[in-house]
Image 1 (cartoon, one colour):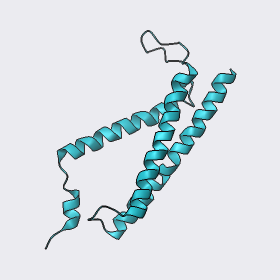
Image 2 (spheres, one colour):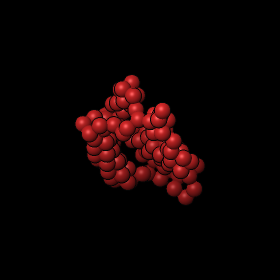
Image 3 (cartoon, rainbow, N blue to C red):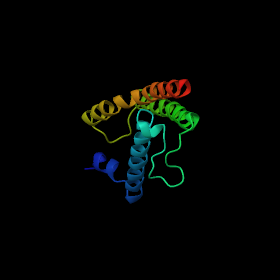
Length: 128
């Protein structure tokens, strides 16, 4: 008998490396988001050579954060809608599909929330 579930999970070492890299980049970008609400997002930490103690130009944080919010919304909504309305890849049970959908639902809020925090950062920094 042919086991489609096992076949769907056999992907090789390259895919594992991709997932690790995706995790590291996601975590780094998530931590950078904290700079929009932490003091080190306004002043470069002193331990950074040559830049430590200088003020962060507001647009140096606002432009990438705005682009990140837009890209995040476009990507997440595209893939979420594609999966929900276009179907899941073969080889997943109904329980796996439900768990996958439930796991990714909070990700739909990331883009709009990043946009809101970016706007608050912009207003705070430009009024100072």
